[in-house]
View 1: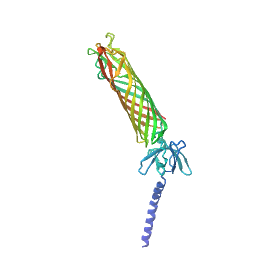
View 2: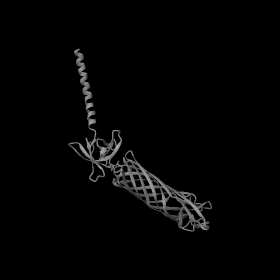
View 3: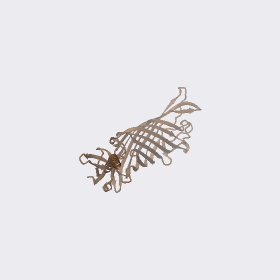
View 4: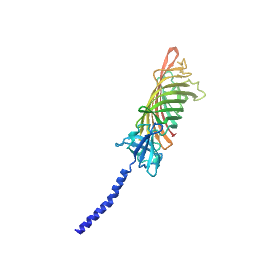
Length: 377
């Protein structure tokens, strides 16, 4: 009996020695969760300040405020921590002024498992200026241009461009229950046919045509942000868009007669409206969709001829409503760098005046692929 008692006691001691630290650790972990104790509005009353208990975050870290169902209620940026009390202040960057909803809620890193320095670029509201050079490949199609037998129904262009965009202000403007930001964007592109277009005369290639195109555009709109700020919708306008194409003809040999002129120089300027929507995926990658229509503009070309018909006016009128749509994916790489892929489709129906009061209908279509890497701050 004595032996059994000693054995039993030793067993209990071992059990307590093994499991007590784990229970204590679990209790400490539970008690050591970061949570919000107090909240108040900022002096500008456009956001909230929250106090984090048991803060394990460094100054400048981005965190998310969650409820008991692990649903995100807001995103905040951590300020300086008091080393004695282990408490830190944080500012909510969502623009929400109903600060009471954050009291007593839990805090966790914005991106679970990521180091604090790598989370600084995952906020939807952190960066406001984006500058990106782009490589561009465009497929142009001109179905219905029957009067010109020398231009291919489709041709490719390759080139480079650059775009500057901004989403202002950093802290959204709150009106009633909605948050708003402005979005502006401007770009420049230059591209060249690759390969050159063959000009066929009597089933023989008599020469080639190279078309160089430059494009300048500017857009602006108002973006409504939804809570959480991972979704947005935008209404905007194409304020200005100018496209100019210049053509160069090259003969195969000096023995060739003068080449018939294909579409030489085409220029146009338009404006219109667009609707856009976007979403922040996994707190980092941004997917956006934009669709719009042209409301006005003008196109002209000096000359189009094929030996039988010649345009009687330089002005080409639109026949119907020009439309465009594009989808873009933006991925942050490090704090200052991001990559973007963009696909855009455009259709412009044109009406070309010919002699004898005849006209030629043209559907000018283009599908552009853009990829680039830029800076954000």
